[in-house]
Length: 192
Image (cartoon, rainbow, N blue to C red; front, side):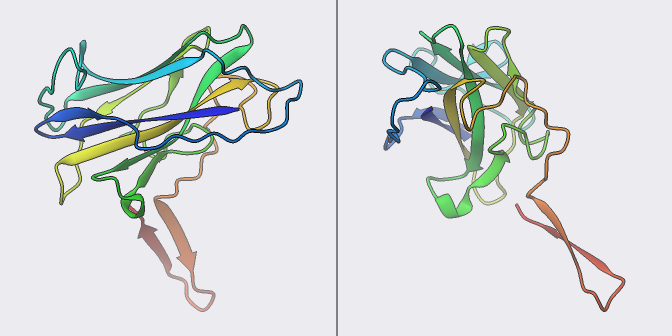
């Protein structure tokens, strides 16, 4: 399975594309479930309405709280049985892993539809997109989105068997409840 990550920096004033600082790949032995990755190219773009924001052609455009944003991932040169799978997305105000907030889990399911909407896939599995309203962190106007894209086959380990993934039983890591066995109170903790 090949994983690719792209980064976008979103500010309430300015949006800029941030080039990935590092890349890595895990090399496994070849087997019948392996996917080819010799010429696959994937992209991660962000749109406000019909305009791409933060691209080299468009320059940095302003994004305001509440603007409708669309994340769009696309892979070309996939083999006939391959498709892209978007998962493990986080949002953070800076390149700071300690402040990363999970917005799309490892199964490709949003933890909160306000923060990241459900990922929609094209019929051929080469394009995926998700929409949400623009938001920001209280102490910083920047929002950095980082997502993993895997090139998959339905029979490969770690890949969904079909798209879209079933998110009906998704656990929300932002919320947890703890119960003291000696008390009838339930404490709800919000992690964000």
